[in-house]
Amino acid sequence: MSPLLAFQLRRIGRNRQFLFFTALLPAGFTVFFTQVFAAAPGGVSQDVAAATMVAMMAYGAIGAALGATIRLSFDRASGWLRQLRVTPVPPGSVVAVDVAVGMLLTLPPLLVVALVGRFVNGVRLEPGAWVALVSVLWLGSAVFVALGLLLGWALEEKAAGGAIGITSVVLAALGGLWVPVEVFPSGLRVVAHALPSYWYAQAGRDAAADGVPAALPLLVLAAFALAFAALAVVVARRRPLAAVAG
Image (cartoon, rainbow, N blue to C red; front, side, top):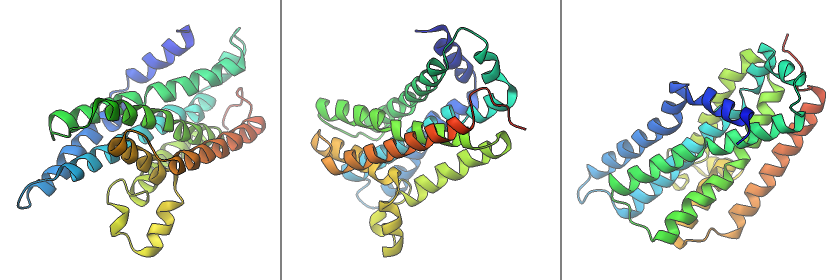
């Protein structure tokens, strides 16, 4: 592990609010939503418990990916990126570390919510399905790492904090992570299918059900990831890593 990567992980790991909102809060939502359904006669079904678990895994991973990468705007404003520019660390390595940090920090919410689903709500999947579920959602989180980098380079420090909350809420609420898309009005269902969060959760649901995600969600997620990454590169060229927000 490079010293810069270790430093960045320690830096974010000391942020207890980040850990709470990305790992513990989705786990709490998992229990809350299933207990609401469990109040009905017959209790919560395995399908509902599994679907809720997958949705909250996706929700936590999205928040972690955005929170870990959108901080680029704060690093630009503080002059941290300018300081890195005068060190021997290549600019490409700085970006690679940000991507690695974003990907690594999506693992805690995925694992914590999966453990809650299994041991608190009694979700039972085949061993291969558990591995496929966590793997697909971890790799799929690259979409939101790319989105976070795009927002981090595009926004100034004062706008970045609000952007995290707004973007996360829009992706979760309209992407069907809080309420199933099936109960949406027809117009909102169209909106849901246009968001990467819907396809992200769908890939997880497929993996949990069959052990292998369907091709369509993966192709859609790959297209979103490429689009966000390409836009991030365009914005980064106009806002060099050494730039300081005014």
